[in-house]
Length: 305
Image (cartoon, rainbow, N blue to C red):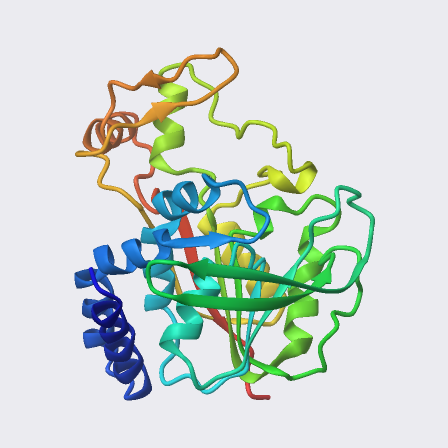
């Protein structure tokens, strides 16, 4: 794959996004997924372990593409990505929406009561494509800071993706604070793991632990609390947001991809369950089969008035 070929991918996506050709934009994302994957895999993040990018891309690419599908088009900005490190989704936004201001927000302190403050700049570099980007982010503890370091009504769109589940002190206070920095009519796009996803059910059926392992990155490095789709939409509604779209979605086809267990036994186990067989179990006991995808995707809007 040549640098010219990948440049064309992002030129095509950028053109379709600017013209608000939503169906064609979505189709291009998935038909060019392998090119996008190889592009992201070519990057190295400054001061990061060498296996971080490959592992992250392998896990997150389907979710990245699905998240991009939810962006209201056309997009003029400015945009905020909460939890932008390691900047791979940030990079996709930068390439697809080169005309808009894209800002980042992060927090790394192991002290969960530290407020943060200041900025951090990190570089992503691809020797393959001869590209180097420096991304700066505000350092802010979302739970401790009562007022985020942005003026009111600043952002057209805020990405709050795969972050809520990591919060531990006062997670629910975040929504009203994000409300303040959104423009009237602006959107909040939230993604989180689904607490009642089918893979969790499969693990429980086999007597395996479905909770995350502890992380060397401290309390914020693990999932401290996951949510259901009903919970998440209710929390947003209680904070005056209008729900535009809400759904769950699997990153993999678990009728084709094996479900594995990872726990402190020291062994990974291949589960004898598929998506279809887990659904059969749920139906056999009259349990709900709705909203059992891996992740929750909710696009919410701050009303104009």
